[in-house]
Amino acid sequence: MFNQYDVIVVGGGHAGSEAAAAAANLGGKTLLITMSLQNIAQMSCNPAMGGIAKGQIVREIDALGGYSGIVTDKTAIQFKMLNKSKGPAMWSPRAQSDRMRFSECWRLMLEQTKNLDFYQDMVNGLLIENNIIVGVKTALGITIKAKTVIITAGTFLNGLIHIGDKTFGGGRAGESASTGITEDLVKYGFEAGRMKTGTPPRVDGRSLDYSKMIEQPGDEIPAKFSYLPTTKALQKQRSCYMSYTSIEVHNLLREGFDRSPMFNGRIKSIGPRYCPSIEDKIDRFASKERHQLFVEPEGWDTVEVYVNGFSTSLPDDIQDKALRKVPGFENVKFFRYGYAIEYDYFPPTQLTHTLETKRIKNLYFAGQINGTTGYEEAAAQGLMAGINAVLNITNKPPFILKRNEAYIGVLIDDLITKGTEEPYRMFTSRAEYRTLLRQDNADLRLTPLSYKIGLASKERMKRVEEKQVKTDLFVKFLKDLSVKPEEINPILEANNTALINQSMKMFKIAARPQLSFNDIKVLPKITTFISENNIDTEIVEQTEIHVKYAGYIEKEKNQADKLNRLENVKIPANFDYNKVKSLSIEAKQKLTKIQPTTISQASRISGVSPSDISVLLVYMGR
Image 1 (cartoon, rainbow, N blue to C red):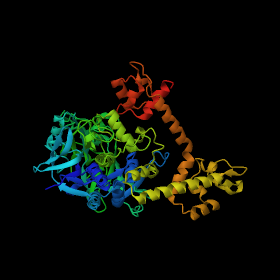
Image 2: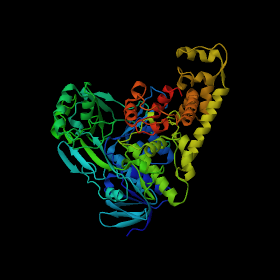
Image 3: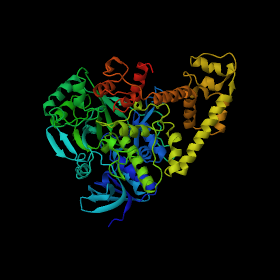
Image 4: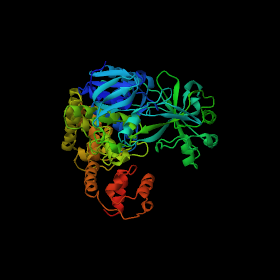
């Protein structure tokens, strides 16, 4: 029935979709097997892509030739650039998506991808010979042979859903769990564990009173994710809204704690530290009188609303009673209640940097099976697994991104070298080279690497080369351009920065933090240059960042060299980490518990960020 495939991808979530697209676009004969073709790239939780550090990952996926950025642009209903008040290393794009159209767009793009076949069934067994994967078995008893297999099972492996004292099997609401794969892998010596994640209620937007909430509109001039001109920035947007819990809401939620699977011991696995349930928040932060709730529309036309910040596994009656006390939710109607889900994962220290397993050759893991949380982290792993699976069978060198090349490199290196005991989420603080790894330059960093292996298109590469040439040209122009006091002083005075009394190079003036390029663009010589050289907004932004942050970038490179030289510095026995005030709370907890003997060991502990290591080095006088 089925011929042998180069690559079989098990699971059609964000990791599976990117893996299938990458493998097929590199010429691999690929089969995507999923339990539901209607739910390809389903947004199981919040209807959004991007955010702090995650937005950088989506732009990196796009720069490499993945689909996530394109699909997000095509289905977005709101766009925001977060952290614009901070430096460009912290700027992070985020888009609300139309949840139904997002999944539909992914499916249609995959269907238009050459070399890619689809099959709806549950994979419940792996075909392994002499510690080499040779195919899969399905619930219908069909065996399908393949040279490589990528498992992207999400939360489906022996998934168990909890709502109060009710428990039932499932991979997500309304869908059955997947069985058999974990058992096969454990039989071959893999270490498995359990993790937990949760999701909030979905409610009827028609039952909410938005006049009692705070409107959260998108950016006045929205940007987009994909570097390709084929996607367009939004012309209209839908607003989100914000409301708050209260002491009354917290007291009502506490009434259900004795029936909560989190507190009565039924859930023993660890949930995401950085996306806690509402009951976890009011338990851990008991002194806090209120918590933010973000009210997010699920699409352009649907009335379904996602209550971000109210993730819970409390009993349905408690959810109902408490949410009605939130301003604007007095008459709320539930579409579905929040729930927690437990699922199997495999500690990622069992993988190589290509995401191939160490025990079974040609078998790859990507996504939540590796202990991560989030669509973006999953999609990035899927892309890299898909690339490496094809490079593997065509006897080409593996494609591994370094920590100084991409957030994706940081993500995979963290997983492989440090492992994770709780759902891993990417943050800018995890990247020691974050000034280099900005969202604006992902194409300059990564498209040439992807083009070299045959994934990024000629069109992408041509745009990157043009962007680099024009940026370099603009920088050179500013270095060569001298401006007289009478030309620039009115602008300097208007921006409360020191005047000049003799001609000065524009590059030096443009580097001043008080000035933006919007201020200096009005100078006739600069206006003419921009017009004659067809310099667009993207080039202007790239040039401005280069001019203003050149010193920081150089400093970061020097710091990286220093860290590499000192990674074997000894840590005194029984060192008291609590006296190092600048360490994060998580780092203090983990370091105190594990007591590493060297800085190198400390840097590989999950939850100890590169900035924490820098703090330790400074504290020890190094």
